[in-house]
Image 1 (cartoon, rainbow, N blue to C red):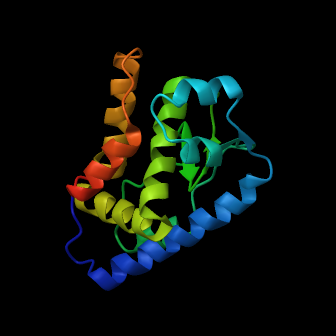
Image 2: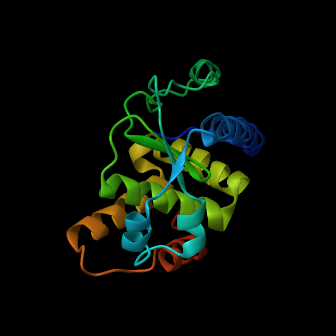
Amino acid sequence: MSFPFLNDQVIQMMAGMVSKYIEDQRGKYEASAHPLSAGQVQHFSAYFPAPTLDRARFAHAVPKLKNPDFYLQLRVMGIKNLPSFEDVAAITFIDVVVHNVPLTDPIRFHELVHVEQYRQMGLEEFSHRYIKGFLKGGSYAQIPLEKHARELEERYAAEPGRPFSVETEVREAIAAGLV
């Protein structure tokens, strides 16, 4: 499902709402977030650059995350199939990962891919691509940024003894227009 009636100006406005929400949520959870343990840093350093691992913080959402207030406005615009924040395992707000469930290494890995995507693109570009990906694909599962993170997570889980550079994978996906 795509939304051809949404022009670039409306998409830019939506991306601005998402960016503001992301910044606000990052600020809300940053103080209670903790860094990766030394063992986790050592484990994930085979995949991620030090700046990504140094920046990443993790916070448990209590109570569970709620849908953003702007969801009502999006629904009025005819946009359905929005992901429920209460149902996701975790969400990354720039470099602060807020999780609804206990974290496993594959979930951590997936969210660290998003930290790397933010690091390389910046908040505004990430938000714009995320919104455009959702609108073009019509669902959370079809967002290229999510699909890429899921593909890398699956590769990590399938071949735990074969490290690869997520930094390079993200850079190449951005350059190729895949995310």
